[in-house]
Image (cartoon, rainbow, N blue to C red; front, top):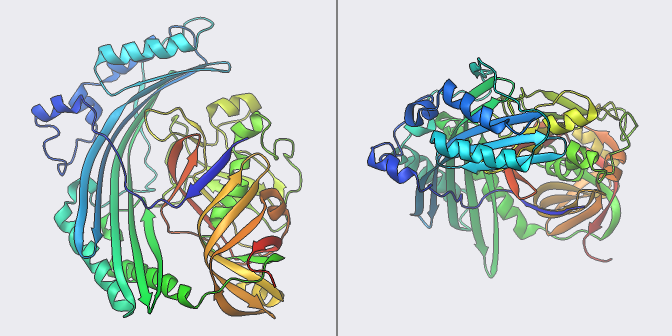
Length: 512
């Protein structure tokens, strides 16, 4: 069983430029990071054509294989940070390479290389094949489906990020800073962090399929520090998604500045609620982090295949109220967790995990799907070409319930609303969790009476799911830039929730 720590992603992005790029720079290929790469950089820059891919796949399957794939990746990233009106950091970087995987039974052979020459890739393929061996050699097909490009318009951009220069981004960053500073005279400092990424991926499998697409991503974070007398408070807000430059409209920047300042100023009036077991209302949107961490990970098929998840023997059984339906989908347009196909080349889909209160499915990669005798759900994900894929969440959310937010609040005599979360701990096997609430509200006599902060909620994910007694009709995905960590790998995800009432959770407030 694994104990995990999670944190909403807001820190610096660290990518290293591989050594082989120095040769590209001499050829003028990496001289200007603002120049758009070709649609297929693997072919144009490194000569990776169908014959090359077939040769590497043949080497990969030489020791026998049930599954095998090549995962090519070229990622161009830009980050900018403004603090105290000064641009303190502005970075552009490139990471690229290929990961090679072969699977035989429970053996997985994996190798990667940043050198995309045929000799280097064949050497890496032999390394992976040597780790997992058994059965007759598996050769690549005479003809690959080259390339089968996934086009679902989940995240197509008017202008690629590689064609948007720093000079165009700076006015947006400065505008957000000015908007936040103007919101309240108590605002002392504003920090703005900008990040965008353009990731080109090509997956080639031993059964002859080749998929290729461009995956954009961006995040804009606003952090506010405010002072009132001797008191200092800090909070923030962010926007993220597989969006383009036109995502950051004046209206979006205004909303982001308002959220960051309002969340900060509310902390001056906030207090801690009484401690003890009580009803907890999970606010719509951002509270989906609790669903993701305390429930979603337990429904990833690898944990169930190994018997470490509490849900391992509950397929088809009742796990929540009839009105509860939980979904993990890769098909939410523009969302941070959206994917046309997963990192194994399997088409993504909308996977219903809990349907009308009953456990209906796990999230499967190719390995777990084979074990359970089902089709992959398009949930095989990896952080980069340096990592093996495994079952992961994409956009995880609960659908609308039959109630309203007002009905839920009115039903609570003494409890709290959990609105924004910053960090916590989850034990994946049993689902025990502790979450830290940054912003929330006290509910007394069916009414919201005061803001709260610095509150922990403590419970068990499966029990909390079973104790949902009301759910509103206001479900939506949170706009924040969440990154999910698992086994040392981080991937972008989305999550959401309607307003939900959990009948009882332990609240770490103050003693009466």
